Image 1 (cartoon, rainbow, N blue to C red):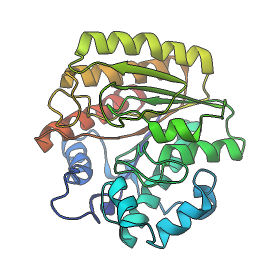
Image 2 (image 1 turned 60 degrees about the vertical axis):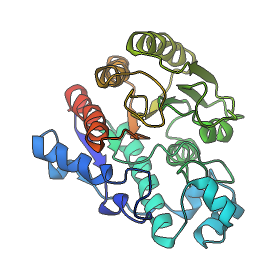
Image 3 (image 1 turned 90 degrees about the vertical axis):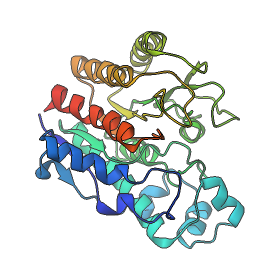
Image 4 (image 1 turned 90 degrees about the horizontal axis):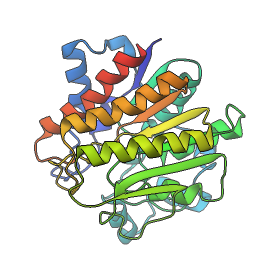
Length: 301
């Protein structure tokens, strides 16, 4: 079995200098994985921008029109987390197509990851929290539209609730949304996922992993998914500036191992998007994300 990874140089571009979002990681992760030999150049692919008709399976026509034409108000741009420009929108489209292409590859037996993505705060008609287009939601809706699958599970383990994904699929039984996140963390007004597991500040490895072990299996048993979209944010780390949890780097790695092991054992295709990570040291972010790729290589290569 092979592994394919979506990545493009512009993943790390087109946001203002000094922005708190650690854009460096989008180039440092591939560099590290190539340097250590976990991945080879041929394992990477550069996605094209996602097509408008696929965007409109998930997002409203009015929102997409105003987004692509840079017509959103200053207030709306602030809610998204950054000022908009044409290159930024193009970047979002490429990241989204990377997740969709990866999902299609996963269904054909090639495990896939996206160096970016996991933009789970993008709603049907607006962006929030550094998310403009919901990459996993668009990929899921496309798979449903063309009849590739009929049962999908979102496993969202970013420290922040996947509120946009929950809202998009609240009336869609073919997609089960599972979010395990900080109870007191952003977003402060939560949506209702199919299953929300809320964690108290300071939750450490043992409790975190025990909860995941129980609830992950419940979700798989209930949904019997034909594919899993895994949002593997590393903002669960105790070192994260925004996370508020107490999970160690080893605990975060054990989390990913649990998800991959379950998918491997049950033969469930999986597409992985990286999600958030805001530790003070970029090296901590890169190492935690790199562990996800190392484990993917161990289980699926």
